[in-house]
Image 1 (cartoon, protein in one colour):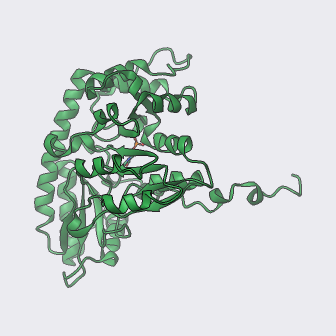
Image 2 (image 1 turned 180 degrees about the vertical axis):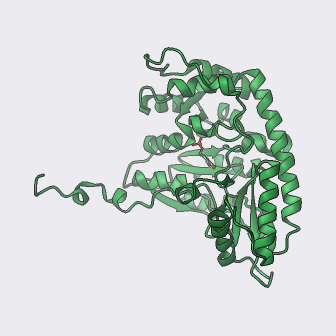
Length: 389
Ligand SMILES: Cc1ncc(COP(=O)(O)O)c(C=O)c1O
C-alpha cells in the first residue's frame, strides 16, 4: 500500500463526522419486536404469493408501470406520471435532498420531534438542518406555521420542508389547515414533503391523505410506503407522489433499476384489490388492538400520559419517576434496557426527543405480544422481579 494513502484524509469531512441512523435493532435484534413500527400482524400476503418470480435473468422494468397503475386506482390519482417508486421511503428522502439541495450551501427544515432520517440524509449530503419544533404542549404535536414562516424568510430560504403526518414518534396527524398554511406561505421558495408512512392507520375523517393535493400544488411531494400497513418492510418499496415535473427529475436521478424484480412481483400482488381489502382488515384489527393496549397500559401505576393522538400503529407513552410525579428519562431508559436485555421485548426509547421526556414508543403488537408486554411493564414498574424469558 502506498505510504501516502490516508483514508481519513480523502473521506468527505461531513461523512467522517456523521452520526449514522441508529435503530433499537442495532442493539437488540430478537424477541418481541415492538420497536420499528412494522406490522406486527405480519405481511398481508400468503407465503406462496411472494415466491415464484419469473425471468430473474432479466433486469426489472425501470419504470415499474404495472405497480404504478395499481397505485393510481388505489389512491385515486390522475395518472402514473404523478408516481415515483423508491427503495423504501428512505431512498426517496435521499433523492429529494440530492435533487434540490446543493451540498455545503442549502438547507432543509424539519419539525422535531420527527423521523430521524431527514437529518441523517441531510448530513450525508452536507446539507444544513433548520429545526422549528412542533407545538408539544399537552402532547398536541402540531405545526407552528408562524415560526415556520419566520424560518422560511431567512436568506437563503430552506429548500425542503419535511413534515410527517401521522408523525413519528408523535403518532399524530398534522391539521390540514396548518399544512395548507405552509404550502401557501409567501416565504416558501422550495418544496414541502409530507411523509405519510402511517396514513392507512388513521381514521378516514381525521387523517385523510393529502396525496391528491399534488394536482393543485406543484411544490408538494407526498411519500407513502408498503412497509407499514401492508406489512412489507422487508421488500423496501416506497412511493412518491408529486407533480409530473418533479417525478421526471426523480426518474432522471435514480439508479436505472432501483426496484428489483422480487420486490416488484411482491408489491404487485400486494396491490391487488383482494389484498388491499386484506390490508384494510388488518389495519382495523391493529386499531382495535391499539385501543385495548391504550386502555390497559394507562391503568398501570408508573405509566404517565399517552402523548399524541394515536393515529398510527404505535403509541408514545410516558414513564414516571418512582414517586409517580413526573416523567423520567432515567426510569424510561431503564425500562427500555430491562425489557430488551432480560425480558425479550424490544421497544424504542424516545425520551431525548423534543417534547418526549420519559417516553417510550411502542408498536402495537399482536394480542399475545401486548399481553406479555403489559405483564412485564406491570412487574417492572411495580418493582417486583420479573422472570426472564
Ligand atoms: C415516518 C417514517 N417515514 C419513513 C420511514 C421509512 O419507510 P420505508 O420503510 O419505506 O423506508 C419510516 C420507518 O420507520 C417512518 O417512520
